[in-house]
Image (tube, rainbow, N blue to C red; front, side):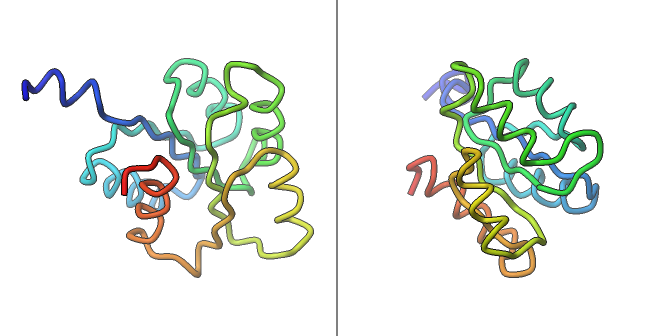
Amino acid sequence: MPAAALVWEMKKILVVEDEKELSDVLAGRLKEGGFLVAVAYDGKEALDKIAKEKPDLILLDLVMPVLDGIGVLKELQSSFETKDIPVIVLTNLLSEEKIAQVLEAGGTHYLVKSDYTADDVIAAVKKRLDLV
């Protein structure tokens, strides 16, 4: 298959994480897994990149500067163009209330950072995109 055809089929992931070290690890592992990757470090930058990049899936932190993850989810749900983008929330917050907020705001998965390795996150991305 020509290289151009392979690039065309690659899925685009937006990593939204204000912890640079973690965003670098996730972005690197996703690239190794064959994904195109964009990174945003706050909610406002995420919305700008979503409009520009049109990702196939978003990995989203909840606690971020400028606009938090719940705010990003609500913005995504308010637009016909973005409401169907799958969003995996990756956070340190674990509470039934927070999980309910995320699901109500349109998140599709909720992962607690301390419970998952980078490999687990990549597996969740692949599963959500029906690549496994």
